[in-house]
Amino acid sequence: MSATSNTAIVGIGQTAFGKGLVDSELSLACQAISAALDDAGVAPHEVDGLASFTLEPNREVDVARAVGLGDITFFSQVGYGGGAACGAVGQAALAVASDQCNVAVAWRARKRSAAASRPWAQVSKRIADSGQWSRPFGLLRPVDEIAMLTRRYMHEYGATRDHLANVALAARTHANRNPNATMYAKPLTREQYMEARWISEPLCLFDNCLETDGALAVVIASLARARDLPNRPVVIDSFAQGLPRDHQTMTNYFCDDPLRGPAWTAAAKLWSNASVTPADVKVAQLYDAFSPLIILSLEGYGFCARGEGGPFTDDGAIELGGRLPVNTSGAGMSEAYVHGFNLVLEGARQIRGTSTAQVANADVSLVTSGEGVPTSALVLTEDR
Image 1 (spheres, rainbow, N blue to C red):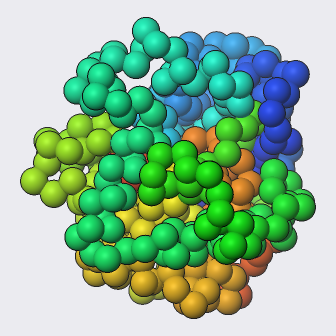
Image 2: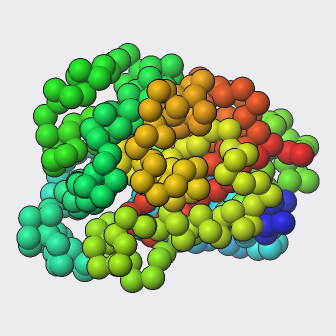
Image 3: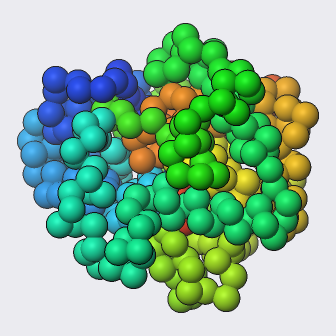
């Protein structure tokens, strides 16, 4: 039994998604947290734990005051952007499980739809830290770094652009069922995918996540408390983080096997703590800043063998009705990109039975954070 298995997500909330939203990041955070508390049926003053991203610096004081929270006895932040969503939720759950707090909130608010707001758009920041080892040689953006790994994967295992298209099309198909998704009313065909402009070859426009503003939050309490609240408890069966030996953020070029990323490290701990196995997972929310990360994650989290992630996506296998539906809200590529926190909410909705692309009998849902950066993952289950 894992340390988090006696905790549950009891409330979820989010703002609208969009580009250039007028609200500040702080305002968006407060709106999402308030919505999650309303959904949970929990009063703000009952919240005594907070977890968020290091990308929201020194935000706890402002959030606690603005939302009307109680005395805070636990607060933490998790780094590495897209790798942090499951980490924030998992650390909040650990705090509840260890009596550091009784009710915790984890959230992500983001305003980065403007191109100038992205770190790689700021020349002075391009060669900060580990960027000095890749960006002077032309790998200026994360998409350039992932493109290099994708090309190597294609060379070693024979993956094709059709496999990448499978990922993009599945996300878009699911988004077309989700009224809250940015791409709700915008279908995508394979022909459109193949004709799209390059962003960083072999990755085209539709291999990339969206850039959006918005915020999402979850409320976490003990499983015993969850059973007395309005919503079906979403049990946090297992939680893990992963930072492999000799890893370099995003590029991973200096490891013996650059294609064996942080997912493998997180997965080993995740499944060792879980009460279930990959074979029990009915639906997966896999971090998708770029389409090849889905293929790498399918392998890293144990759904197929090395080199089989591409063919795994064939014949609608990752769409609703397939053997493992993936990213059923549209996720980062077609719903919104909020550093993967929307994957957590969709994982919870699947267990609740309220997704717009609901998988039948979805009693086990996997949620992952960014592959390529130090990462984290959750196994969510129904209350058994």
